[in-house]
Structure formats: structure tokens, C-alpha cells
Length: 256
Image 1: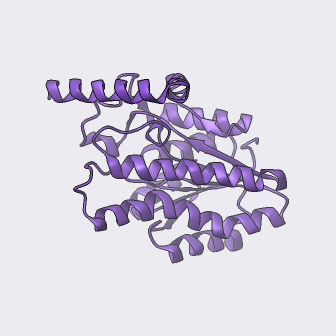
Image 2: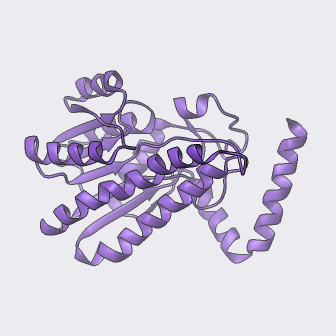
């Protein structure tokens, strides 16, 4: 896909990777970029910078997602590219209560499903479209110390894969973005030692990787190329991979 002259919607567009993508896509000649976020002040600031539109959207609320898509389609035009980018991180393991699991599930998984529920019929009727989901390398590997994050990002990757398999033959393009550590507000207050070994990327660097991936219509977009090697290692010898991750976890404990 060539971004030029396309109508694009980005959830989580007020800051971080979402804001960086909005600016990068606008620079690449997008016709119109919509920044959707709960943070309307932040979304408006980005929209003003790029000549786009801000829409207040809570992706954990299905009605908000439906309203976002329907409003853009009616007032701006057919959505060519929808970037389901909003997400949260949650640390912890089996002790995380059900309401915590439900919260992260709504944002990191159901938001992708609910957007596709509205978009896929519209896009297929038009002969095609593009959906990008922001997941994480944790969705391909694992995130030590963050079970809810690991589980929901795995689910996000799986759903994107299912979309690509099911509708790719009908013209729907799908990509899933799986970075490791990224310098954003979301990672500012957490221990990044588990993801910083291969470098913490800027949000702008990730946005460029996403643009490159979309132009090449790649399903799996890996801003940290080393993740491709980890996937191969994990797939070729899962037992060895688990043992290595166990050792890594013990080293982290010892250095804490």
C-alpha cells in the first residue's frame, strides 16, 4: 500500500507510537489522518500539527469504536487504513485479580476484534482495505513478570493472523506490529530490563518501521529485527527456549 492520499485512523493517537505514526503518515502524504484517543487534549495537539482530526474514543467501549468508524466514514470518507494501536501494559502474574485481567483484555484484545467487526464488512464490500494491529514481541515470545500483557498480546497476534488467513483472499491486508522496548510514556514507569537488551527504540523509529512494513504489505512487522531470530530459536527447540528464559529470569532476580 502507498500511504499517499489515503484516509487513516489511528487509535491511541495522542502520544507514543500512535502519535509518531500519525506524524509519519502525514509526512508521507496521507490524505487525512484521524487521531482517536481518550486523551482528547493530546489527540487534538497531534491533529493540529498534521492537519488531521481528533476523535475522543475509549477503545474499551464497543460503542465508541463503532461511533469512531461510522463518523469517519460519514464525515471524512472511506477508511483505507485502520491502525488499532491503543494498548496498555500490566505487570504481575497469577495474583492479578479478575478485574485487572478484564481491563487489559478489553483494551489489548477486544478492541481489535470490535474494530474488525465493523470494518471488515465495509472494506470487503469496497474490494479491500488495510488493518494494522499494534501488539508486541511479547505476543510472539513472552514478557517476564507480566502475564496479563503476555497473554493479551499473544491473543492480539493470533487474531491478526486469523484475519489475514480468513480475508486475505478477498482483498483485506493485515499487519501486526511487534516491537520490543520502545521509549514511550507507557514504559517510563516500569522496569524495562527485560526488553532493553536489544535496545530501546524511539516511537519515531517504530513508526518508520510500520510505514515500511505497510508499503511492503508484510504481515509481521518487527522494528527490532533480532526478534525474528528469537522466533526461530523458540520454534526449533521450545524446551531449550523455556530453559533459557528461566535462566534470564533468575539473572534478573539476582540483579534486582
